[in-house]
Image (cartoon, rainbow, N blue to C red):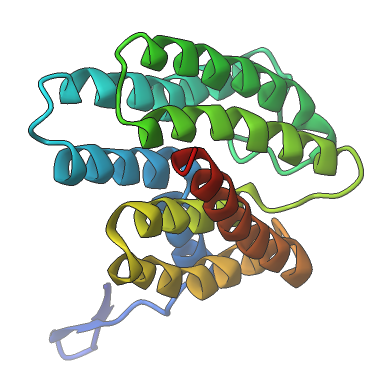
Length: 212
């Protein structure tokens, strides 16, 4: 709100102009991979395997792999100047963090296996590593949206666990596409391909994995 002063001493409040860029930035952060992924993992474990005595251990491994490690990695790379921004807007700067995250998820998969969890949970970490390789290969030539890939693959995970009721999360896809385009982080095709490939790949992978 802004304060407007009239000459006769009265004060009135006027609404601030709507800042489109700021709103898009908020949406982009709220639906970023380090927020969406852990929320979805917690939901899967707490609503799907809450009776399992090892549920907290499952969440810990998933949380470290999806949030703690990426945050520490990106913060460290930003501090030493390897990336210019926390969103890593330049395709050329994404190779190193993606490579490290492949190793992080592969290591998380090995830790998770030692707990003998439900097969879906090992599949999450295994295919996080596999799909990060896919993103890395695409990134060598093209800038696919990791935000959209993560959001739609998270919807796919919820779909595999809870069925069609979980597909409501896909309603957020157009909003995130809009925000990334407004921020000039991606063009329309980069966001669309990220969303479509993210959902299709994880559903196909986990259908195969859990059906073995």
